[in-house]
Image 1 (cartoon, rainbow, N blue to C red):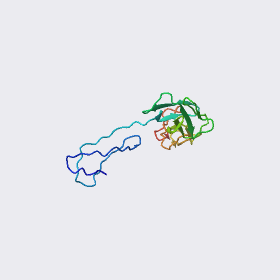
Image 2 (cartoon, rainbow, N blue to C red):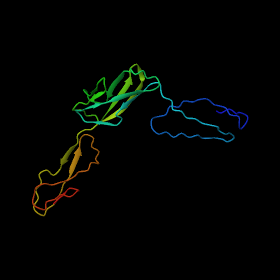
Image 3 (cartoon, rainbow, N blue to C red):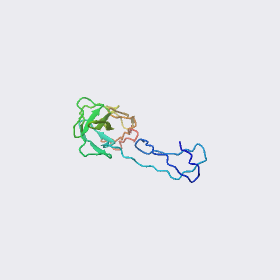
Image 4 (cartoon, one colour):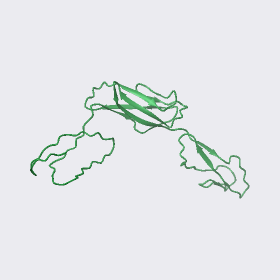
Length: 193
C-alpha cells in the first residue's frame, strides 16, 4: 500500500521489500490497479546472501567406472574463506561415492541414470546446492538378421535394436557392408542388396 502524500509533487518512500527469486531469467512487472498517482523513482537492487554455495560443473555427464571432479564455490557477504564443504551423493548403487574434496567415483556396475550431488557448508545445513549428474550407460546394438544368406539379385531388409543404458529410441543406425561380390551394398535404411 502506498500512502497518499496529499500533492502530486509531494513524494514519499514506501520502504524496502526483499523478494527471493529463483535462478535464471525472471520477469518483473508493475501492475497499476487504479489511476490517480505518479511515481518519481523505482529501484531494484541485487542483494547478495550472507553465504551461498554453487556446485560445478552444472551439467555433468560421467560413465560408469569413471571419476568426476566436482567443485564448490562459496560466495556471499559473509565469506570467511575457511568454510568446510560437506559433500554427499544420492541415487546411486552401493560403492558410488564422493570424497571430502569433491571427487565423484562412479562404480563400474552403476545402474542409475542420474545421481544427485550436494555440497553443503558445514554447520549451515540450509546453505547447500544440488546438481544432477547424468550417468551415461553403455548402449547395445543387436542386428536382427545375424546369419542370413542371399543369392545374387536378392535383397534383405536389415533391422537393428538399440538397448541398454540411456537408449531413447531416437538413435540413428548407420549401416555399412564389407566384403561380398562387387555391387553388394546397403542403403541408409538397411536394405541389403
